Length: 113
Picture 1: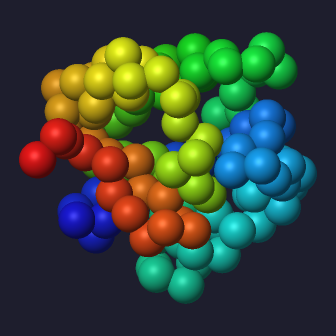
Picture 2 (picture 1 turned 90 degrees about the vertical axis):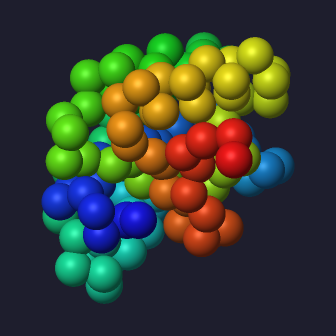
């Protein structure tokens, strides 16, 4: 499924996820290296705001993404914990016909199926 898109735009955060804080420059290196190793085009990321539990940049990114673009992030634990926010993100992903790929878990979030 990842190869269905011509490019992947990064999504990074300075908030802790899965009890870890990974500096944004290091997240960029991880995402860029993954794309390079898999012959994918990496697009510089949207950085989430500093406010705790803020996912406005992620939702904006999904709403504005090009048809030939997917999203890449380090970990699924970067997603909100609240089920209603995850449901909203998945609905937008489905409507935009795109996905979020999580490098650490080697997992694609696209739908409820």
